[in-house]
Length: 201
Image (cartoon, rainbow, N blue to C red; front, side, top):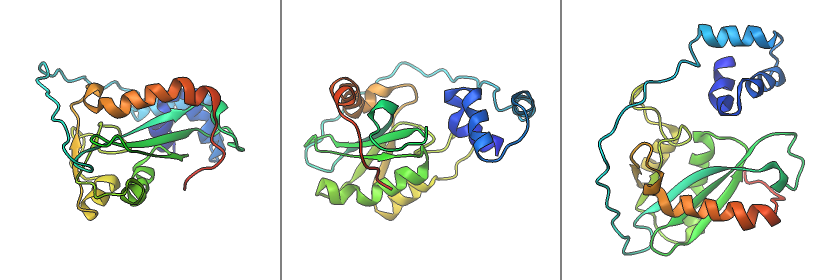
């Protein structure tokens, strides 16, 4: 349980990991949890790879569905217009590079389960066949290639839908620049004045 909660909440700090563990039935102290985390070496920093200078050149899409960028971002609590019980919510956004048509959903879990379910409704809501999906290397999309070559639920569902998948270069968010910029735009006007009152499941 500690390993699971640490995986999904470590970016929020160990206090949040402890609170989520307590909610799930953990009864030991915070210090005891920290000892277990050290024993399992969950906080051991990974050695960051060095990558050569990027020679990336973006190829412009020439028709709808040729390439769709997908990304996920955290939604501030003040934008949630329903009883959230202090849970975090995330916005999954897909943007077609050619038409700039956008489809988004609000989910309450950062996982491949949420992103694969998002794919089920993607083509129907965009209105055309998607040939290729481009994402970053987040755990909600893919596994760490240094740890395992197993495909995630998200990647398997792409194969089922006959959609190609492209991972951008690590630490290179500009390669997914269209959806990243859209999220920055959302941060200012949308999340400042509007809030969500329903959630897609």
